[in-house]
Length: 167
Image (cartoon, rainbow, N blue to C red; front, side):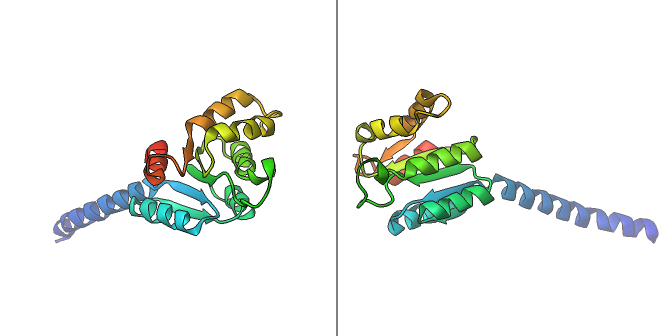
């Protein structure tokens, strides 16, 4: 009787072991994504799509909340708006640069996409100015250019962001 009981438990234990492994793998495969944008519609569109793909989403509608999330959470990806307050003038309006620098210092392995309503050519000089004191500023500028998405570009910016993230 005792031998039969042990064999009876083997398939049940195997089932729960496989189930545990499956859940653990699904949990580990979820990527953590920060969406930092002042436009609620953009945040919600990106959130909806990325949550459907099974990722953890952290939302920041301000520079302060983005910094807080970067401090507290380990991120795989960050989607950052370059201009948080369009009423500001000159380089002060490019607050996303500050988030970019903060993220690079705190979590250098996080993949980054910068969104903007302004074409990259018009933002290149403020980026250069802001990155002057950084280690390898030309490398950082090249990374920004490669991961820059112009919201008013010809392509659908949501698809472009997802292509840049490759998730």
